[in-house]
Length: 328
Image (cartoon, rainbow, N blue to C red; front, side):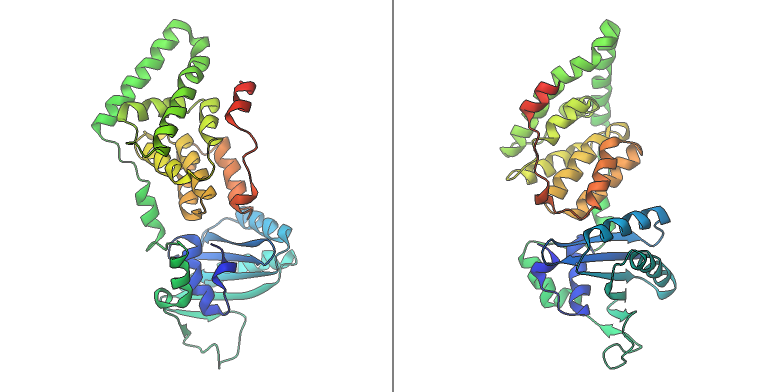
């Protein structure tokens, strides 16, 4: 569901919609809501400490789409929020992007940076009950969820492996070490030979509603997904109507593998969540990928994709498993 479907008619509607559009109630953030009746709408959340390079990049992407309207909403105390709103505003306006509205939200009240009419924008702010609003009701009816905060999402993806998982990883690593002792040059091809069938098997089981992979399977997956060919086997299989199964599968793997093996399953989860319209989960998973490997190429590609504003349905998967087999 997008901001178009939610029918935002007032600043109060915008404030009510944003938590459902980004998946949680924001704090210490600036949200850029980009609206275009013909191309859809999307929201990008920025930390108040976001660096200039990121702001420039996002401003470029927004301007490139030539949106019909852009709304800024800053969340937090005025002394911290206003400078960030101004930084984002200045970069957008320098590129010819017109702001429809700019707001600051604190607790249950909001203020407009653009309106000076005391009749509609009093100094004490305008009260809004987000959870009781018709916009929130429409969002919930449309299947959208707003978690209490971003930390709730982070906790959902926190590492949860125990001693059994650590032993399983040790066994898997010892197996690869034996391969290297036999023929180090053949390790990469053996990973593909073992990994592609395993990925296909666990995805088939996930889509059939079977139990999640065992510790030994997760450990072996974590290591084999280091191979780009094995990882891409999972990537190209992510299409409707099984995206929920992919989300559950890769979240299970991500929360159990040790950090050195987290980048690939984190990116697979991020892409599946993005394809499913769960932007907040996608971004948190992407953060896990960057934490594991700041230079991971798939994470960088997904970051560009997520902040481009392209809707998930606009990016069909044109490469399938058979084409991967032909590329080796």
